Figure 1: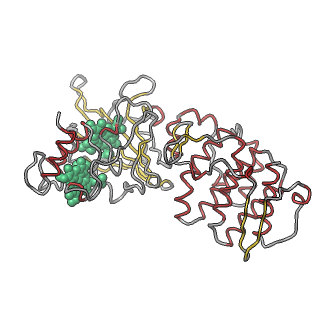
Figure 2: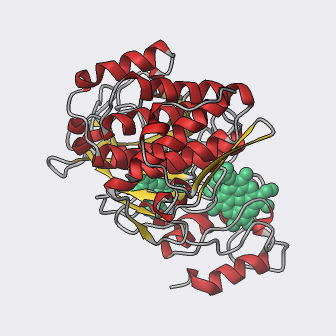
Figure 3: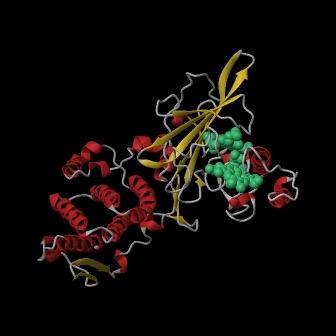
Length: 431
Ligand code: HEC
Ligand code: HEC
């Protein structure tokens, strides 16, 4: 009942979008809720769904953050999608996005929807699958502001619909595939087969948060950027590698830290941290070269290879990377050195960065916001943890900041930066 009246709204909408009139089978045969009114104002489609039953409990765009099987709104309140809410939520989103498209696009997408419904008596799982593809296509055609508003939430939502309406064999849905492919919409069918859903939840969570996924180590997709001239951690040799996915704005960096293995008499990669950050959502994901299977470092030379899915990630790493990796963006960049990839890669997110981790990692609010004090003249100063103070601030002030030729120095004096640095020392940096 709920569903049938909803379908009427949609089919009617489709008719009006095509500029057509008249009624179709479903609206004459079914019982229509009187409250559902569809009006045609100046050739523009306007829908009012006043029936409370047809309004989803929350909208797709209310979903702000997702970890594992959980989703939250902007204030951090947990949300749960009921299975029987999925179609309602999709329809609301379709209607909302539709209003943001031009007439031509409205026509195309409403026609597509009508054609799909006319094709065959589909199951809910079919509809969910189709509507997700339709929404993806609509958003891909929308203005950037509309994409920014809906895409991140929609990706999280879509992932959950796959869990609520699992698809075991894509072959069972070949008629939908054919339909989408005839309309050049196949690329908008984004599916995570159930086998893969379990294999690495962290990677999926990162993907859902629009974070680029790093290639496996050893892949040619990694770009070698050179040896880091400055290394606060003092490794024997530190290489900088970077990766970007043309389809996912943002960047990945890998930092193999080499050391001489005295016992074996060889030089090898000891630590190999990997971080990827989404330019759209500001979410960042972390990996380190520790084997999931053995818990041991995976060390090696030039021929070192491993799979990203096989190493420790932000959900399980013992070391909390956010003790140091904090600030507006996740990366710790020494400007003008090899590690500064900002000319070629997008490392400045649209939204202040937040880590993806089920371990409660955070990027706490800044110690000094941008513009708040001398040192924060060019960038915010991240919240002061003991590691951040001693590993980052102290060394930066002594070596790299505000520039490497003339660093401010850590011990406060009456210089321009002195007072600000003294405030930081007093705050939380001293033992
Ligand atoms: C004690 C502070 C500290 C911690 C904790 C830390 N890092 Fe870093 N990391 C740094 C510093 C400092 C740099 C900049 C290069 C340098 O000076 O060594 C850096 C650089 C990196 C880079 C290169 C990209 C960039 O941001 O410059 C990656 C990748 C990285 N770290 C990964 C990790 C991962 C993964 C973890 C958690 C397992 C981690 N780091 C924990 C201090 C830290
Ligand atoms: C003239 C502009 C400027 C001023 C002033 C400045 N910084 Fe920076 N700082 C930068 C840039 C650019 C980066 C690279 C930031 C990025 O892309 O994430 C940076 C990075 C850093 C980093 C991260 C890693 C590194 O190389 O050190 C720290 C920590 C830092 N600044 C501390 C300070 C402190 C402390 C002061 C005050 C003494 C200061 N900065 C003043 C421009 C500035």
